[in-house]
Image 1 (tube, rainbow, N blue to C red):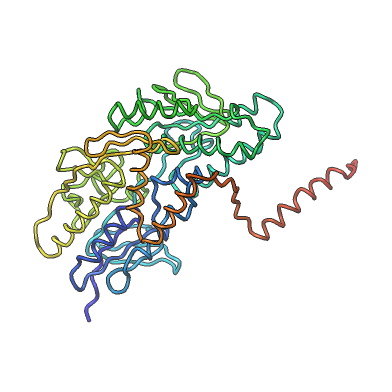
Image 2 (cartoon, one colour):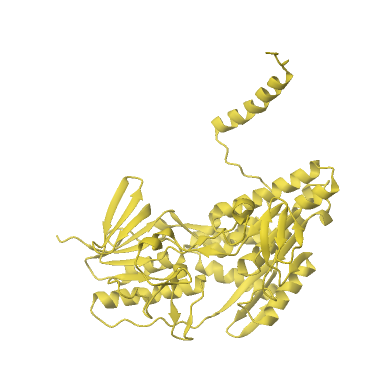
Length: 445
């Protein structure tokens, strides 16, 4: 029996998993999909703010890749880090749980997205918290709880104000959504911290443009700002961060904004794998042909956040959003099958259904098919859309139940530490040893 021919997909995000699932249904006999990803799950990044605000549990915004694929002879999932790509040998080298493995391919698809770039502003890498992964969202949530608990024990009013000030850099979709989630969570949590006053907690959004959500119509950007201001979220427009330190953010104008917690939602950088690949790049992303093939590289394709794909419908580059990642994946699946069967491929064309963002509990803005919404209708539409994207009926039901619960009950304020037994014992013993050493008289030499 001849060996199966592989289509290797690098990256398990929206683009990669949607492409794999589409190819499973369309590939001719003798072909197999191999999906390689460092994580065993897909993260629904637009819902990370929901984790920060404790509207859902962390496991609800991820979906196991193995559960999404059919498996068997049609596909294989490999959990591992791609170390190198050899286009001449058509081979991907990956570090897996079983050691280094070489995976040969007939077609290779790059769908590994982008990484957070914390080098845009001096001090950002050392003092700011990114929001790219589930772990980032959980860390920010825990940091909020730590700050509130610290305020209860602090007596200096200036220190209390600084501890209670949360600064979000970036007024795009992620920035607006996490700022709204922060404000809602802080307001709900204060009922359990009687020694913390509501006015001691503040959320500020810093945006370099003259309005929030520049991707949306101006009226919706203004509506988002009004919604946030109504909930005491300070919005600083035409403000650029020049430096971040432990005390807060210094703006380009020289003004200092004091705050103990800075959250960064701006800046991306390409995957390090691109440095070794002779592919055309622009703005740190792979420049593709209209059909998402990479010019000059036979059998190589790219899509999603890591690719610069021109939309034939508008002649503009497609934005790095979940909607376009899914549309690109479905189009690319048809093109790969066409290439295998010797048929002509088609240029990517997609008419945007619109864009939307939440600005807090029961609040949002949306532009869908030319219809502009804000407030509760936009918030409900946002939730309905992402609920449809979640794979498997069981996971949809779990998220719907959590969302419904959070509409009527206070957010969970549990500080999850995931401490192991040996670590807990070491932490318990350390303060006792330090106290004992301090109580012993110091011997003179």
